[in-house]
Image 1 (cartoon, rainbow, N blue to C red):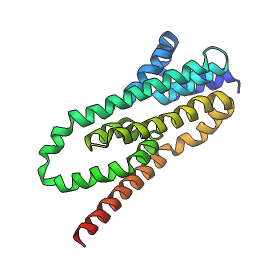
Image 2 (image 1 turned 180 degrees about the vertical axis):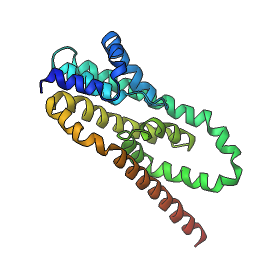
Image 3 (image 1 turned 135 degrees about the vertical axis):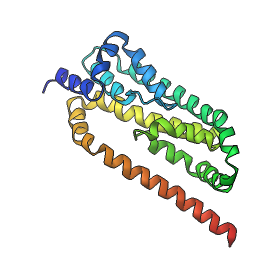
Image 4 (image 1 turned 180 degrees about the horizontal axis):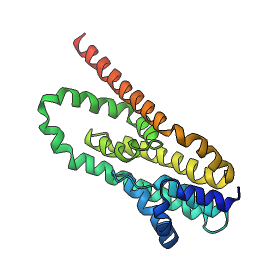
Length: 210
């Protein structure tokens, strides 16, 4: 299959109706989608990143510009999501007084392990759109959040942007194999993360009552 066909396949995978928007707005579409995902809006930022990277492989876009736009937009969106959680949802969590002890433990767990959680969440649909808001709502320290989101964003943009640009047709073949497994990987990863947080909370609770 030609590279042009691979690009068409990528664009029609979940975002066929958005292809005219990419044709018209180009990197602005990538910027808006990547940014919006950071604060809870489920736009196809990842697929647009792959599509733009494949277009760059044909010389129709500059891969350096694509990576910079995706990275900058993602970082901006993540910070907005964090601020929404920290200042927009803080009051709601405070009013949940009957769950105060559990929230305190969740905050402590996120403060300690949040960097790793943010990196993993960046690669998973659903968690990618909500993890920053959760980090803010659970009062994750700013510097630790920034560390986690910079690391996660850099790995994500590198994998789906530079990876698609470098591997070209092979990248699409890999994603074609992985795509049917995505719902199962997402569910399994979510269960693992929740189980890990539950384990940390239980361990801290046991230590307090010892």
